[in-house]
Image (tube, rainbow, N blue to C red):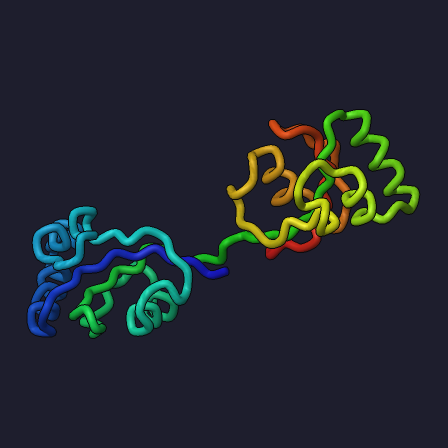
Length: 186
């Protein structure tokens, strides 16, 4: 998933927007201009909008942020809200992965299940029978998630280890996990 970070200044007219752009190109600090002139509450944070994905902003704004050059001041950009100067601060693909797991109470039980899976026991069947996680009813499937959405020990395995391999035992605050990474967008 593509994500971007941007700041903006929102004003009522194209003329004011163009004038501000010229002042910023002449040395006026973007954040200071946002704080003083922007009609958006984000002006109090120098116009910073944080990080967001494609489709979270109005189409005209979105198009600039996800298609134009990072680091430059773009605009005036007209939307239903008014006229914007947009400064794209970053744009990158967010790392995502999909995984399934089996959660048990002891390291020994985890090791025993790992051995049985290596010997041919179906992972999903083992999850359905042995996992104490609600995902057991879906064969341990956790779906797709981004880095930082799981506890650190789990996250580290999912985003750093080999895809398609059963990893574990991995101890977390919940117990011991066997984790199979089913996909990851490296």
